[in-house]
Length: 346
Length: 289
Image (tube, rainbow over all chains, first blue to last red):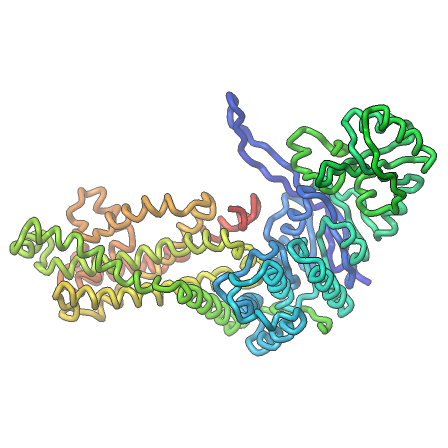
């Protein structure tokens, strides 16, 4: 196997002007990517995981030539994103902005034909390819209607078909199932797997853990513009080592969370508030179940009410929590604005 | 199912493939506009309405003597045709001049600009397609408006050198394309088209001398006006259709000036547009709006 995507110390900094009340305008620098390096082997499905603002989209935009990196290098299909932009663009099929990026006054077929021409797909193969994609995605019922009449799921399917129009060896899919209903999302994942089995390499970004675990051969977890963990889903879960996850559901005041954090053997605590005011608490511990009575005692003493205590299989989200102390639902940019760094509490 | 592939377009695109990009963009844009009912019809009437205002004002102020007074200052008493040509040309100039800027904003807002930048097609071919579409649209409206206006105001544009006028129009479109790209580069940077266009439309109509000869201007403003290629085009077209002398005296000096502009302005415009695109990709990316 050989690397079809190679990323070496890629960095991207954004600068913007900021004026605070009573102060002079000053330049604010945000490091969206910090020395990111990784390889993707030919034929792999590689997942990029991380919360909003972690740097996934910036990385994807640098790899697809939409953004120029501040420093570092990257090659796709052997072509440099800095010097061989057209060859890189011909080597990738992209779905980056969900259902945006389509002309609503054109039909699905007209959109595919238009973008096919922009990818230099000759006319006859283009028609044939569109017909095959319509069959593959079961889009025959709506392909000849203007996109403005589509449901969001149908728009997503045409956006996905657009990424396949040039039959590129690398597919880059940024949250492709985000507005799809459950059965359609499952169907799309199945198609991605089939495309992968037929030889396509897939770079897949998502914030849905189950999607990454189900689909990806390897996963990189990003936070604050850095890759904080990389490996197969199993390797990442095993990397927690002696650490275990205890999951509790209930209502937990902040003092209770602080008390649990202070316990010896507790490495991280992350809370995710669900609808109805209930909170899911993930406590990463060393030493396993022996700490459970102490945790429950600390929570109860500090005014918590516990509804459920669940044994839990380790997930990729637990890996993220163990590394950062946060759940994936928290937007990284908010943490930065609040002055927190890695390890801030959710 | 899909077979293993290395993708389309990895070899150097042929001229046929590049032409196919131009055609695809042009056809897509024509399809889109044809699905907005009435848009093209309304556009045809705009120059007629635009010319009617000063023509009726002239009649109201100077009555039967309007043509006589006009001839003293411009060399022709046919002020109706003078203004009709001015407003029809101005419509072509406005559409062409703001073309790239409007196109960029629209594509940014719909999210399709990033999709275009993701494809390997060269921007120049995409822009050529967009321009081809605008040309079809504006020249159709120009011709129709000239015919409707001539019938309404009772003038005959076929008395003059119509072929010469069309030649000057065709030549003048090239520097307009260049100016359009320069303006597009500004829009890409400031990300706001409407306020700039609202102000610039009046500046352009003033500089072009849509309703009056630029020879009226004080010296500095006069030379500034003729440094703007659409002014030379408008002046040369009028001179051909109304048998007048051009601003420069002879038609061949106007032709020489327009030839220089036709070669230099598009090159300058494309260079600035490409550099701005690259600079934007260093900062926030082309899709940011």
